[in-house]
Amino acid sequence: MIKASELFDLKDKVAIVTGGSRGLGNKLALGLAEFGAKIVVADINDEEIKNMRKRINDLLFIETNVTNKKAVERMVTETKKTMGRIDILVNNAGISIRSAAENFTEEEWCKVIDVNLNGAFFVAQAVGKVMIEQGFGNIINIASVVGQRGLYHPHDFSVAYCCSKGGVIQLTKALAAEWACHKIRVNAVAPTYLWTDLVKGLFDNKDFEEYIYNKIPLGRLVNPEEIIGSVVFLASEASSMVTGHILNVDGGWLAV
Image (tube, rainbow, N blue to C red):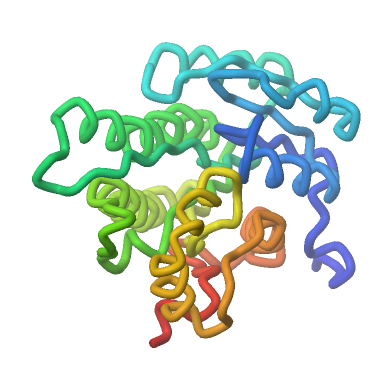
């Protein structure tokens, strides 16, 4: 029986974080490392890796385009060869393109779906094969509240993003059901708008700011650091009987 004091201990666990060199992925990688995990960052660029190495001793960076199955498979093979196993996957890589639905181009639509949904599946599939062989594993997908409820405002059209994150939520539930027999848990974290450089421009529009803040009972956006606790919980033994769950970090958005 695990001690209560050890429930959140991730010591020596090997965790892959896709899109982990910047933004939310960067925060999650650093957070998991603070709880003892060995970190693999899979990203298309190494923008913050030098700074991350100053804070993470066991850090492996592998350049990875999650929309390319061969690149994903190489990343997983290299991780297993270097680290020996894969305990945790945080499927974080994602993009958004803002455009009115009637104006969305085929290229724009396919790009968002390809990164956010296809990429999440390709990585989960490749990592899942390793976890099935191991007989254990833990997958955490980064979804969104707008994958569960439509969003409309003239300042932020997000039809492709909403659809892609809705797909991630269903992917989470389907994989949780299918892989439970292999002792692989699959969950998702669904934040509301995160206060990052990517959204600051949006909130220069006071009408849009008021619209979003009125949807959040707690009255503010989520700071990236506030997602760390949710991911550590789902990655650890503290959530050992939790699978197929969507953990909303939304300040109450979906409660009203």
